[in-house]
Length: 188
Image 1: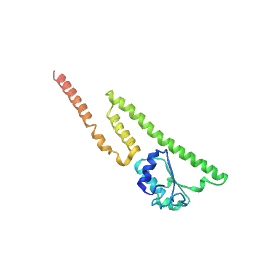
Image 2: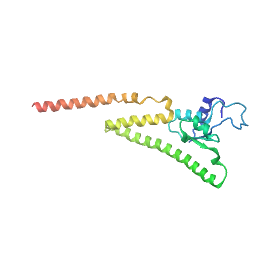
Image 3: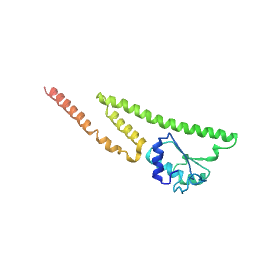
Image 4: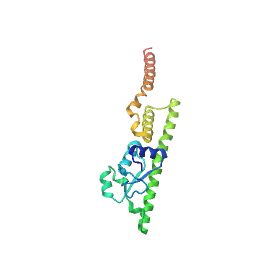
């Protein structure tokens, strides 16, 4: 681990991992570093999740009580000894690794599905066949994808909906024109 918290977060994102698996006690049995790591694995994972929503993260520990108390989400914490030992532990290890793989696949699938659906809706919009519901879904999907990249710097969804005001005004204007034409025909 890096000595500075922000530096560690930058290093992680620089490597573009599919998941984060970290120890809870990052100072425990350190031999290759000569400084005190002023943060723990739960803090690191919470920071990652504050940037990338729903990113696959796992905290391994021998101090599960402490890690659970430090975490907002007990589902992130796993007892380290599941990775070592007996035949029973081997089964648990396989289950843990399947869980990691499953989380990665699920996360990537959610993003890919959102990208594909957004692409289809944008094509529908470009052909002037998008409904108001389609426009709302475009905003929702765009916001979801933006948060999956950098949640802290995402433009709030309500500002994105304001960008549709022009299109809605155009539609209302066209409806008004049609209504005037209908009224003229009724008067004749």
